[in-house]
Image (cartoon, rainbow over all chains, first blue to last red; front, side):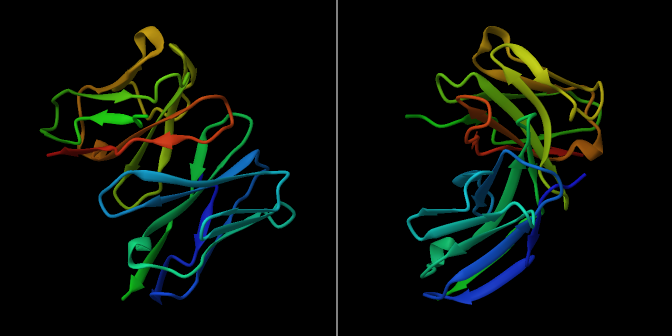
Length: 110
Length: 113
């Protein structure tokens, strides 16, 4: 069964704006990871946040994790055309296999 | 440092044929995973190797799929015989330890006609 669910399914923003997407999951986790997939290409690892962490930054990315609500958010600040992609959250538990959501498709308009 | 590589990038075969996908993990990564995304669905786990041993193969859809990792380096995923519903993108990922970042390859797009 699907563990992570991203919201919204699609997002269209103007270059320079911020993009926020959310991920909810159902069972307890060890880590939550965010990935990006540009059209027709592989998954690029963006950031990993552990279950005992609440916030993490990497460049223009900010990830939060609320284990009490079983949810995470990914914020991309000052978006660029190159940020146009699909974004996935993936969770892992004690079995280490990743469970993915359906993804959020982000389009950044020039 | 080279990332995870997969071969081929695309494969088009007819129903009933056999296809073998290859994955070369990042050097030194003991953990190797296979995932796939079939049309319109989310990315799903297939199996997990630790070195040459299958740690978890709970996601393998049926016995037409066979994964190997002889020697604990590269891995192959064979589909025999292929069916239409096997079409999708097959991803391989590797990680250094359990519970760390999993780094994905570019995927193999499999089309079964």
